[in-house]
Image (cartoon, rainbow, N blue to C red; front, side, top):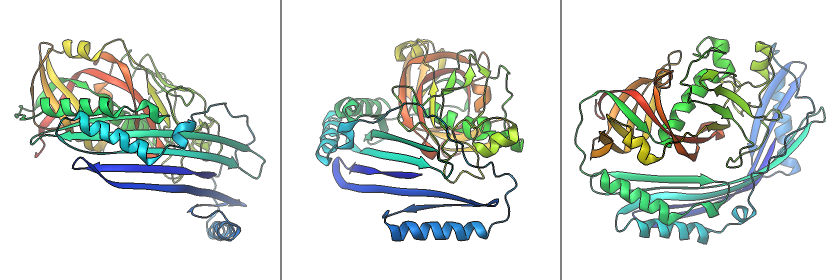
Length: 420
């Protein structure tokens, strides 16, 4: 698999640009199988005969040193891909001046608050080929703006990603970040306990990342550490989750590093668990077919979700807030760590703004809190009170992309302040 393209990054801190970089992307991923002896190597650099020849020689040598792999599933046979083009010509050619203009708009809209963050653009062409004659190619672009505005006692965050940079409005994002910072200023403590929560999309994407890695991953099921029970009503009926590279808002390419074409895949439909993510290795062991979710470096880890779409509901942000009796509105999670993959108990902290909501009104900002919560229980039947109508496109690990709304959940277990 060969990936080639360009990326640009403009970073700012203390409300001025301090770094602007651009780089050519040139990555080759090579897998060699010699009579059941398998090795994979990646290379970043010039694609000339000398460097590629050395990559091939090293891969062959590494394969020869490996024991026979009894679970080697073989090469992906030739298969028709799907026609998906998540490329934007303007973004592929965008200049540093245009990124800087969006930074300037963000800073101006923050109305004197200290700001920091980045604006990035990326464009790449990707081609896969194997010795069985299977060939696929695609292109993708994306642009991201991620910024914070800061008062003396609080940070407010705003971020947006899209296929094209013209979708990023620095002024709108700056106004949102500064409003959050100002309303989150001078927070006071709140007693730990169980509260209703409105989790903004950044929190929701964090939840999904754990459910996918430790639950819907075919390797996790194979190892006996997954909560997934296919065909069971494990989630609230309002939860419908799919992996869908064909969604027009998505970014990415329609095949994985093994050359398996991706297809829309329903993981959860109306709260019922429907499917798992597989690469060729886990699919073979499960007696299934690969779903196109192999990732580079994921041999021991398994499959990874790529284009996750959590279906939107009907509630506006104001309606979500109005539906809360007594609870918290949370912007971000961070430092999240899984304690038990089987039950999906995760601990972490809030960040970038938390507010107490009483009788459908935001009452006051509160200090950051620690939580310890089963993500499966939080989304269980009857636990989801409302789903937001607006979705946000967000990036996660392993090049995963999430298109998710906010959620109003019945109960979330806050176990202490940020310091304990």
